[in-house]
Length: 333
Image (cartoon, rainbow, N blue to C red; front, top):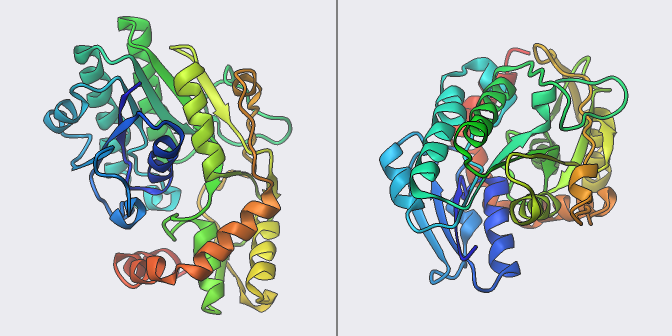
């Protein structure tokens, strides 16, 4: 795999994957296709070697751009997606356009060009909530919000191309990912940056004890890379951190690391259809030799310190389109 197309490579996990590939494989060239929506950020790609990284601004929902970007590539890894549950509840049109129609363009183009591997990055949310135990890849899908439903639709479409046309499609389903460069609409960077400014942390009332598994971004990238290079076409691989924490535990950890107290916690109206617990079993991926390397406490310390030391990155984000969204999302809760 000398030339890999990474779609959505200016976003949080996508840009981390680009950086991971370039530092891990000296002979790889990355073609990076990103629409540059609100969550895309060229600051995430600073100082990359232009001889090994080609950036193209474009939408995976545009078949012609996808075809041009994929030409000559050995593999494609799709991170391009609308990803935020709360935004999908406010309006789902763009989620369907990107997460389903965009995936169609990727797999159809890959079929025409004979690409060696197509990896679709998905989410543990497609399984829905589970009270006990952990989901395995063979468990049925039960998405419970427009975001996860759109992701499930996209991955099912992709896998149908393996069954129908023999296209070597692989799917990964990752748990809640955290780390540097995450757009501050997501709970962890939102709470960290709010805490730095001594602003309220809007914690969903009724969701304080909901559980998520936390996966450090570089571990997620190494898991995706393992599936890409060692996984079997047509298969699904869960990527989990093994760090299940209640939302209140996460919130208190952020307060501890930022030196703030519980007075900042502000309970707001819960998210509609809020799933109580996500948990996935990564045993299938571990059998290929992968394991997460970052302990949760260490990852949290590194992440909080990064936001403390890189205000230049997030302050300009929170003063723009984000402020309008934030008021719409939390202003009347």
